[in-house]
Image (cartoon, rainbow, N blue to C red):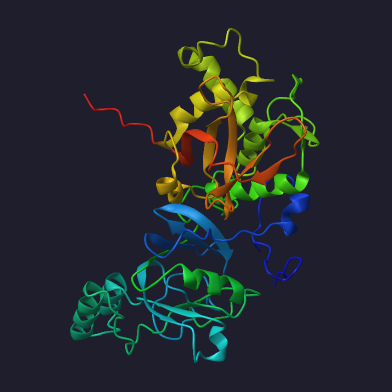
Length: 392
């Protein structure tokens, strides 16, 4: 179990982040932003890496450590096998009172067995055709399927701790985590359980989705407090960086994305060299500085990541999610000249805070900018798929 952070209000993530500035890992806690309710949310679980991810509109918002049945390998087959099921389910019951002690602080029953589980059970002669029909009807009506078959029952996401794989087949969380999750899911929330991946993008292979990895990296940079200093510096290549004590706004992006396994220095240098027409203002590619310039970064992001909007207003602020990248216009000359990462925290303005390194005299910090500073590009780190070539 991971102890609470200072003040006892927030807990460290409990995740094995394979990233930068690791000395700050134990200090980092994330929260689900206050403007995210229950609508449009989902749960994705990776059994191999023991991670549960809450998504909003398909984007990863927060990841949690979890544990499973006492026999964690393999799909659930029948009652008593100690395995956790794999497949697509939904939450069919949510309880927070009068729970059995083993369930901890909250209980979220999932719709096990689903139709696929039932058909396999019929093939193995564990259930009858009539029981399968009852399972099919319940799933079609988005209700709890029969819980009295030999396939097993009462599979839940619940509290109780993550010290080991200890449940009878359920998904166990830390109590504080399941309380938070409970606030952001409801009856019908989809639950996907897979092995080896959450299906949400994980470039560095640490089982933390890229968007969550990026905001974790950005939060570590807030602890690091690099002083704003802009100058040309010769860097090693690849994975080059200026001194951790200094940086500019683009260095926040470079470092935070490196926490997710993106080496923007190398990626952008290669792209600039092979796509010169997209960077006509660059006379000679320079791997020491090109990735540290806002204009170059915008051009690269347009090709590789999802552009959601070219402005942010009060009525669209809810579209900003932790780990999103926003380019801003802060100078009299029109166009993007600053960049930051959307935090998990909201400012007094009601807009999410932006993790950035503002200008001379500042350090990397979370700032309430978006009610007064114009956004020119709002990106989500969803890698664009290359179009398939048509067959002749």
